[in-house]
Length: 337
Ligand code: PEP
Ligand code: MN
Image: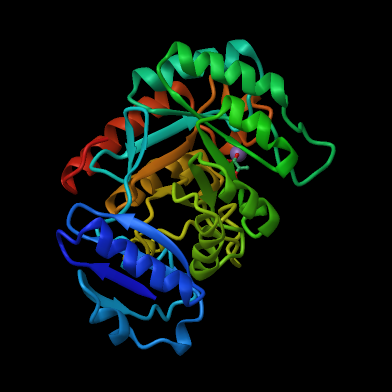
């Protein structure tokens, strides 16, 4: 049930609607927009007549939300969500770049990359300290030491940190070092983990599962939001199809579809989206042209010797060139990058 309050509705009127929803068994989530307060009631919607709310003082309109996701739906926040972390806004006019190596490997590596990506306008340093590798014999990440190195490098260059959490036991550690918790493709439907990150108040970057539909991605985000953590950034990182030329098929159309269905920001990941560094420029351009609020890109000082995902990783000069191209596309669609 979605109750849109009139412009200028008083706190008392809003509270009366909240109390009524609660008394009927709804859990209430409140979204305060510039014009209207919207109350999202999650509960026994079938038994309800929207008119019962529409006649209450201060109520503009009331709707049943029929989609399986409620809080993630664009109806909940028609104006869109802008996530503010320090002075960085994700979901606003600026296309935010999150760049860095697939894995944190050493102090020298992460320091070098932090300096380079910051100089090229990135706002967020990416890097895995806990790596979900297909083989148990592949490099699994430096763990806490990697997070420490990344935090220090990011702080030296005024960057935020995004890093993957693979398991709820890692949450205290990630909360200490990271500004954004990344949930990887393989964990998109790890519902216990989604509930755990829903309980904290730290932005989450939720990557689309390898075989997930857009609806499943949005439902995964609903798990997080229903815990009260509304700062969810979605990520299109390619899905598995019958195509073998690319590692994954980057579904650029998911970006405008998500924008239509949801208020949440979405970023494009052309590195995992293609698996090939020669395809990152065109897919980064395409993602921004399609309305992405940001890019997640793998960059390494020496990609051919990277511990993971080297084939889909840019070197510093290529990263600078990508940013220049992305800036032109951003300005063509009325944004900056
Ligand atoms: C990553 O960002 O390095 C990563 C492992 O991504 P994904 O979960 O999309 O495979
Ligand atoms: Mn990677």
